[in-house]
Length: 275
Length: 313
Image (cartoon, rainbow over the protein chains, first blue to last red):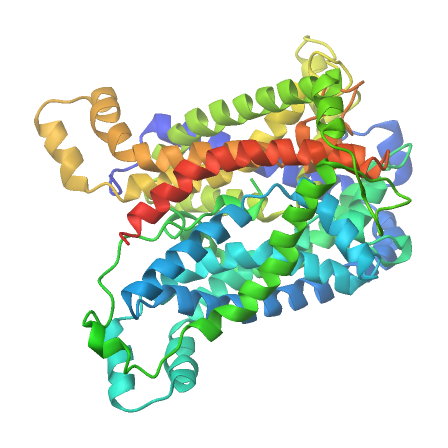
């Protein structure tokens, strides 16, 4: 069913769908080039003289929150990969039948853990991090995000490990390679695709993560991008051009990741998720 | 659907163990346990331990004063308070409506769109990329732009006035707000649903459909008798994932309506969160969260068993 050409009806469906997603994005860009006065007098004008005033107003706030979010998202991605690659290897290799049974149990546990609703998990997590003195610090947020993403990353990484032919392990064993060397020199070099896919998805989700960011980061001067956007929307009177400008600037790093990882995202999310 | 956990991996059944002979594996110098330890420790401390605390909270009197410190056991007081409050049942209803809108939109439009996008071509690939990009955007960004578009003087109302329908208070009319927020959440989760369904469609062998055509089955007959039955496992997973997503429906509610007007858009996760962090009744918040977790676990059981069965242990 992949080679049939588009019929007229199909084209209409696809174009309509595309517009539903394109127009809101255009609206973000359009509005951020409007001045305060323009937005207040005619919020829906399409023809107007573009101004960069909004951007000069928000660039400081936006760049400091982008830096904070970049620190968080990069640390979380690196830490999650450091946990998930070995764990997926352990759960993706069927050494003995006893180990297979044990790993089936672990898989079940990780599956349930990734289903815990985040707005509810944050309630006890807040207490625990407060107990450890980590509420309000970037480290507390990083820990919380790592815990949020790790079970999911392990599940997503495992099929990439399963794709490694077991003959390679057997050859390594015959060659007398130690366990650690097998992992470092054979398994990890075979996983660039998995690491890139999982890394991109973890980065994207951490970048947009909002509940932990707004609950655990309490200093208004040091907010990640979600916290900054939330702060803007909860103001008594929203300044739309500023909000859209911030949305645009804080999404640019995501655009970069998206361009680099587009193909892997489409495949990783569809083919990889339901086999 | 921005939340990750939707993308659950269901690896296909794979081959037998490397060393089936019981005598042989004992000689293997490879130990896999240590590779699992770091992840297991982190998850035990930051995923499992919070769940235990959540359960304890539900049966304790926890407020801002004693969140760090001793909790006094209060029996089933929190649970009874929650179950006896109108707010909880209204939130349950709101969560139900939210889930229903997501299911209907994601499954019907998702199916039609996935069919259209399963055909290769430049148009499909452009639209697919666009949708995946929107999926990747922070929910706060897409929530904010929709709040602007749906505002009283927003673009949607401008168009409606232009065509003579007049202004609609999407987000401030109590009878509309929940539908509007659910609709936006469905819009945001649709790209993910389409990817999943499209993945399922692409895995159907072309020969099967050709054979059905040769036998004289028209497009609708082919969809009902061939495609849908083959797609059933994929759709079942998607249904579970959408319901689970509804239990964490927070971001769009927070940005667009903050649970209002009144409490009409207060879903269960929003209610639990508000109890804990606005009124600081961690005990009640923990009770709502624990009750919701029960629902999640009930849903998770067939799902986990299904995945494990597929593992062919």
